Picture 1 (tube, rainbow, N blue to C red):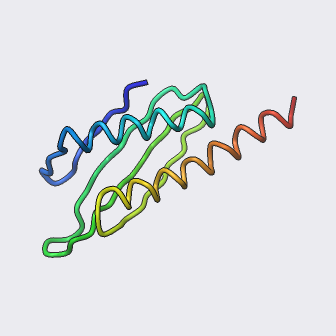
Picture 2: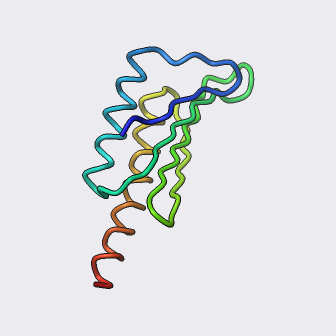
Length: 100
C-alpha cells in the first residue's frame, strides 16, 4: 500500500521524510492486514512556532481511523500519531476476532 502524503500551507516534504512515512504505513499493516488507504497530512503550526502537526487517516472496510499528534520535530509527531492509529487498529482487529 502506497500512502498519500500531503503538506498543508505550502510546506514541502523531503524524500527522506517520504521514505520514513512509507515505512511507517507499511508497519501498520502488521496490525491489520485489510487497510484500504493511508493518508498522511503534515502541517506546521502557526507562524513563528516550531511545532509540527501530523494527521494520519487509515481506512479499512467500513471504518476510518484518524490520529493527530504534534511535536517539536516531524519524526516525534509521526511516532506519536502512528502509536495512536496502531492502538485503534489493534482494538478493531481484536473486536473482529472476538466476534467470530
